[in-house]
Length: 317
Image (cartoon, helix red, strand yellow):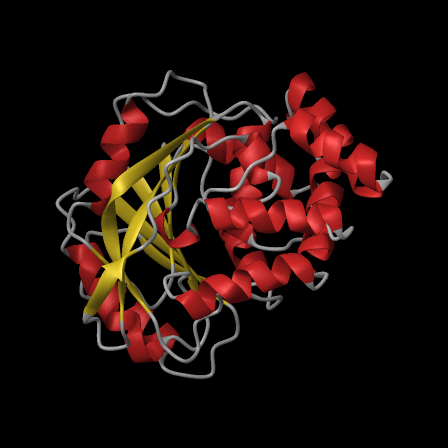
């Protein structure tokens, strides 16, 4: 990783990274929730990916209404939301101690930044750390439906290889994690999803993942969600179907390529796990199932684990 000035460990500043694309319909409520944070020490970078609506003008007005706040609008790569977030990670300066990723259509609870900063403060200096949390799933009008599923199994690389548990709209990172991701991002050729990639890289490099079981934002569900919540039977069945129809296998292939490009940033142990995972996907059936058991790969629910083993059985890993 490149050398960079080290932030003061007592510095609790957070740089908010908001990816914008035609988000004017809900953007103002999200911006207002930034202003309502109990943790007041933050700045904002918005990367606009070619919006054709009033979103960029709303950001300018928000900046003008907060003259003492560092708020900037930059042009995105125009390659989709995942690449826009990787672009934002590169925009964060060399001395910011924390970053927080933001979607354009959620509303943060007032204690979101405070909870993340407090959690990351407990991580030893120099260790990459990712903070994420549950969300309160809401309808398009922000009427709450239910909290997002509670993950009970620990985070780790053996989970990350087959599932993402770090919701991108909740992610906060310390400086060491940002250094890692900026270095890895410059090696990245392909991407499934920015949050899954972040979870893979942090765990693969031996970093720490802090999962907050309390919801910290209102996750708005509407017709144009890029991914959406996994909180209904239909949604759960759709996720499981993706394991079986070939998409999961494609995603795994892309993730393996991406991790291999940044293999020098992974721990030796996790490089070996990655190679074993690559090999087991091509192995004959009996050897494939034995390797899956030996590696200890796992997902967060019994149903998802059953689907994982079924995908292995039919050669869709």
